[in-house]
Length: 220
Image (cartoon, rainbow, N blue to C red; front, side, top):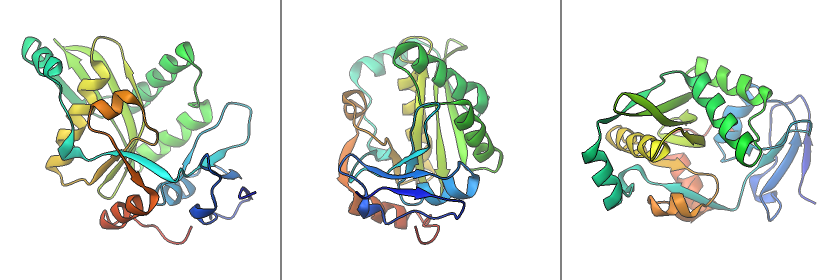
């Protein structure tokens, strides 16, 4: 069984030892240092309230290359019809909490109080960001994620009105493309993200992007 219990020392087992479902390790904490090391190897926390922290590293990855974002005809029509724009870091904590509330209402969520605090700290030191979309000057949706080097690791998104999260993702991709970013890590495949340009790649190819993005933090 390739699952390890992490103690206070900040390290991770070899990602290649992850279980077939991607589970790699159990325990540890959500310190800035541990989170940065984790994301540098494509490892991320995902667990339910009241359970130990679970760390995941799927062997198959799902990403969007920013320059390959797909904007459907219907979305182009929507953008022409309405006054739309995005804002960066309007209110990171609020956007993350809105993502939590949407998921709690619909299907349950991994975004616990502990997660909100941890990613808030990442934001404070410049390693996380949020993107919010507006339609006719009203907040429509948003997303948040981790930013290290030239890679963006998406965490969650929300919509308060039609196409809110899509607008945020399109705006993010266009911004990242302009800045030379290499990928938006989607963590898991969904048909929705595939329709917007998401592709499956191997963990080996994923790590090549990580290295090209200049973000490898050190030994796992």
